[in-house]
Length: 219
Image 1: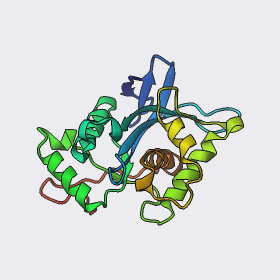
Image 2 (image 1 turned 30 degrees about the vertical axis):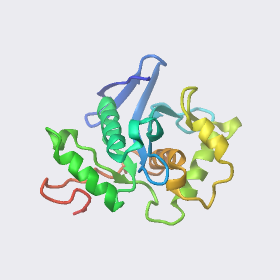
Image 3 (image 1 turned 180 degrees about the horizontal axis):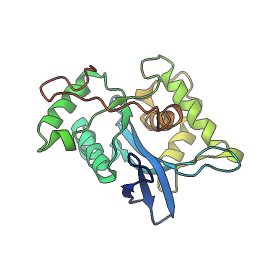
Image 4 (image 1 turned 30 degrees about the horizontal axis):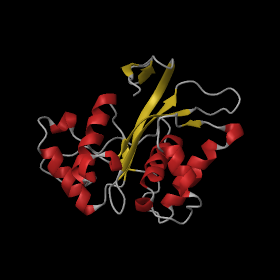
């Protein structure tokens, strides 16, 4: 498992994540998640390198960790939420992208957060991934992942321990599919899509809610 050290960056409002094992510096680290449904849920942690590649003029992305719901005892949704929450806390992540509008899951998440000792600091909150309300969102996820995995211009690195290379290879042609049928691809696409779509100066702020309100109601 890759561990990161989070430090204040070079400007007052910035932070940097340091991977001492691989000698990498990340300017952003985010999560992408797909709820359990017909298949177990999946979540990923993806880091964006601080320095731009001088040849591609893009920043390389690295998969840092993942939560595979099929490996959770019972494969239950609450176990998946708990594992994702623990991973979010481990890496000090502020942005977790997915679909916050799944009613059954948001009610379970709300209950989970209410039972935390400090829900304001420790709570797990899901932000809308790019195009999440568009019927073509999953196709967008597939395209943006494939674009970064082109062999000669590869800028997305999944590592040798991830299940995602096998999932991507076994999936075949998935354009026109549904996120709930390919949770690993969807979760990866949400994280990569957010990093590509929202640059640091334009990244949406996390939803700020009073604790006695629905945490998914944007004001």
